[in-house]
Structure formats: C-alpha cells, structure tokens
Image 1 (cartoon, rainbow, N blue to C red):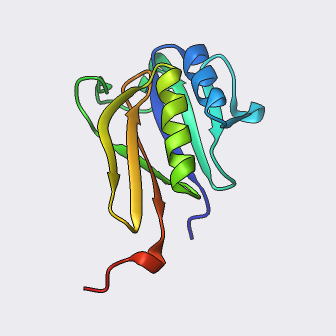
Image 2 (image 1 turned 135 degrees about the vertical axis):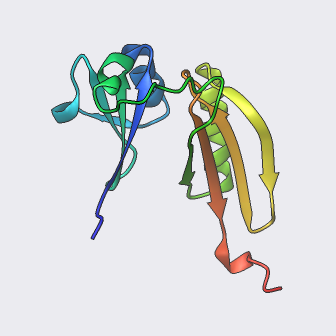
Length: 135
C-alpha cells in the first residue's frame, strides 16, 4: 500500500526555488538534498523533490515541459482553513509567484491558485465537507 507521495519537479534555479518553498513554510530534508536536488517536506506524507533540470532529465527520455508555456500537472493540496489558503497564496505572490486564477468560494470549498517561480501550478483548498450540498 502507498504510504508517501514524492512530487518531482524540474527547476531552473535550485537555490531560488528552495528559498521560495522554505519561505512558504515547507522544510528541507537534508538527507535528500544536495547540489542537484532539494527535498521539501510538505507534511509527514507529502514531499516535493525540486530537481535541477539537468538532473531531472536523467530520470526521463522525454523532453522537459516548460511549465510557463504548458501544463502537465496541477498540484492540489488541502489546507486547514480558508484563511490559511489566503495566507499561503498571498505569501507565494509576494515571493514572486503568479496568480493564474481568481479565488473560488463554493460555500463548502474555498480554493485559490498560483504558479511558482518555474510555472508549476499549485492549488490550495479548504473543504468543509459538512457543508457539501446533498442535491
């Protein structure tokens, strides 16, 4: 059974990307961090591996997508409150992220999104499932 998720993302500047995610509150696991990669700890079970584009290319025979020009994946994470979503997105924007869609409030779910320094799209959402419409 699956116990953890590791999201691998190519980055142009490892130091800048690492600082960006540290400033958002992610921590670094030094055991899996070197000049080619940084392991960012999102939670006890979610990790984001930031890999230099050169190193990332060693894992695939396909060309690396330019996330600023096309989308291959949307990374969606749950937050503990609407305010947390707002704080994360505001902080990301202050750190150089781009807002690519307006926040959406569905009553039972609030979500907002940004693209990081390399264009990877992140969606943060708060869900109150007790407010989910029955119809």
